[in-house]
Length: 292
Image: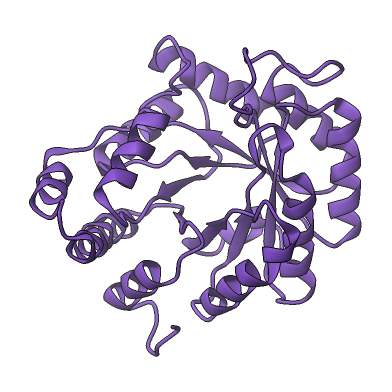
């Protein structure tokens, strides 16, 4: 089912998975996805490796999740390292496989890349890729947005203008980069409203699994670690199990607040793990029986 139709009816819950580099490990990820299917997500997304490095596994995982597991899939599609023809061919294949949702992104460049320049013959900007999809494919289109601004953006005003271009090009909904302070999400909504952006904005949430991971992810995407989270990470820094339980408690409160205040949906970056998100669902009263 197309995601805009779901968003028109309910607050959605969704999960993001990343594909393995080795196709031999696909069954392991599918097993995790099948476990979390018991939590009844409205859709799941499958990421694209830096520069399209996992395109084969991304495509295969998305198609298997759609066909074999019966999950509603949103495929990632990036312009980094991809030609226009490669983007188009990928879209044709996933559409033929029954996938009705895609999120268009710039994507991460391989660590060996020296600049953010597009591939020869590739799209330069995400809104161009979105326009190509809108004109040629009957799929729902998502795009990314950034509560605290994209790390490469000169400021929040420029960032929201870039987001507006993606919506004007045909994006049906937006999914945020991770954030740890809900005020940043609601400030984003205010900026979007002022810019004339009216599409739903789904909140992207990362359950904290360990202290170093949380700090690493925050630094990479320009997210702030608020004092309450920082204090907990410091307090339990030498106890990985305690950090994970603290992360569950923190994320439960964060998601509960978002849902109570009418968020369009919550997209969990689950990192191919089941324990934390399952406990968060139980805490929120979204699941009655064990899904482990």
